[in-house]
Length: 83
Image 1 (tube, helix red, strand yellow):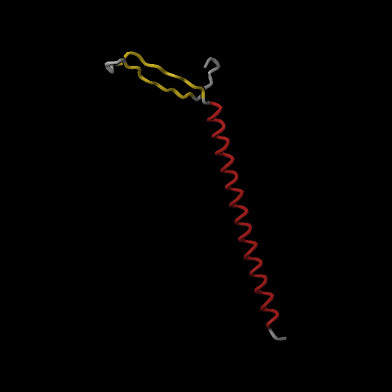
Image 2: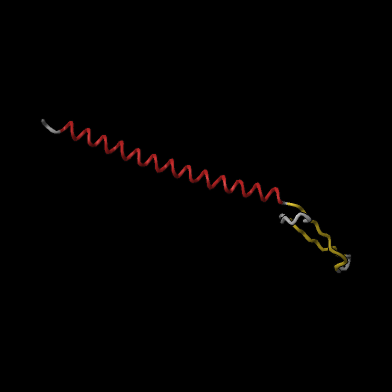
């Protein structure tokens, strides 16, 4: 590009053949897919961030569950001990 920036393009080439199956010319298309690539990158980054949040929440739930079970075990053992 004239501004010195790189962009993503999708290039496709298709041969055109005559009745004898001889190659007579090529047709090509060039599609600017920069916006799509940027959207894919954003989605990927958002998925990574979401996975990290889910992992943090799972770890918190595990710690909390262990704490509750431990506390319940301490309470039951205190109650069952004779004074």
